[in-house]
Length: 553
Image 1 (cartoon, helix red, strand yellow):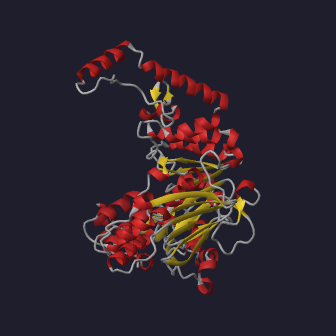
Image 2 (cartoon, helix red, strand yellow):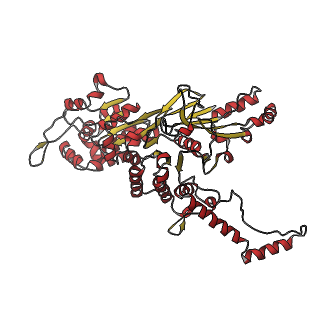
């Protein structure tokens, strides 16, 4: 069975019977940022928490929205295979348990939970999707045929209860959640489920009653409209088999309520018709502004960067960071700006059924302030080559292509990221995540200084996943620059490219006609990016320094 234990305030354990041991995940009060590659499970975690706190799945009550695809695919396949083999195993079920902060909600405290490491009474809620026992006889007859093509979801039910064994409803559960996802937010009749839920939380009981009564008066007046009366008379006259009046009216039942029928407007435009980015901003803002539930709310945000401009995203993140109060926020993202802005110490990486946090990252303040750095490109890649500048990046890309059948590094899952002189800060992240990294750097004529800088990654301290690639020789020459006759640095990438290719080859690559190597060196120094672009687009292969070749291998 697919079993998940998710904790919103204390800890989260995720287990399946296909993955012995599982893993643990700590959520903190305040902001939590889930990152990971596609299919890592970010959305699953958000949806599981929301289901267990609201009974809602993708805008509808879970009991009316059950589907086989909620279940682990491999578990369902194993189950169906057992039916066809005549050796049926237990039907799959889903169990989501939320372990809450001690003492937070006494009404939820009890001992009905499955984590055997816990003792005594614990605050928490459970949601179980499983075969309903009242259908046991029908189910037994069904599987006797041995021809079950899909999970018999029509025999499943949803049990929602507290650890105290009390059944739960959306009205009775003391902790609420808002799942903000612009892509999955509508009732079938157009009303936005999250806006509706937030507005209901904001309104007082008397105000809700006033809205409901006004809505009922509107519905009752429908049948009294002259146009409707004429239409109803016409329908009645058409009927030949009944002497009763037949006509149109509106549903006055409990399921036809104002919160499911009325729509919100923004500057007289229905909420459903405004931009998705603006929808996300408004939903988040209203959820954060709900002071009445501030101490008992979990806000779940799916990729806030979607559909939002950079400037608007910055405003949204500032609002999240400044106004969440005592709410707990769990959001997913692929965006470095989001991760850096909200703090890398709040980052949770989901990777290969394991998690990594950045609470004690020395460089976290650097990445928060310099939000343009591609932090998550490093976090989410398979392998990475770190370089000093954009010209180095172009040369490395071309060197990789020349030695890998013309494929760009990214096509093989290798990121090439230029980071200026901030290698050490990125290496701290790479070391924590065990990401294979090659650093390509100039020795600048000071090998001892370079080796001192990277002493934690060289010699006896060398890490299995990190290699510092630099030229191990010092090169000199007669060239000087400027009025002070400052010695030219022969220990950077461009002079070393000239050293391994010669004057004629690089003149051809650049379309120049320099007679001396030092004249070409001065040209390459002044036009680094243009030279790199020429090398990248050159139709023939050239040679590369040994430390470049070491990096791309």
